[in-house]
Image (cartoon, rainbow, N blue to C red):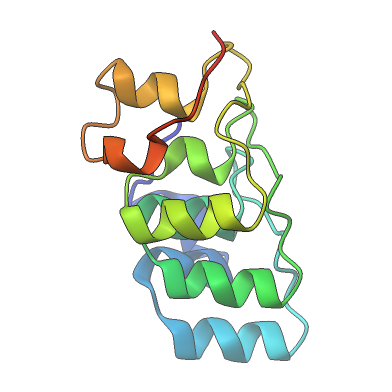
Length: 135
């Protein structure tokens, strides 16, 4: 499982990724408007969408999506942004824009299974009501 670490040295050399972690919408928007790749990755294969989702920065997720970020992008472990997300608004945004809750990472784990196993204890079960997962 990939987690966001503020002191991840890769973030220091990628301003867009750091802006996604920080939720710095103004700076992220300026970078994207000047041609920064919305799908750039860190050393773990995480995109800005992964990092923003993990921090619950739903507005940053919306901005990245507007500039063409791939919602289906997976990190090197096969995690989508939804696998790393534990915030209601961000989950709703990702799911409403096409991310499936039953998509498996390389371990065969879905975002819903991560919740039910207690890995993401902040993830609200109400968002998943009526959904099914596959192990």
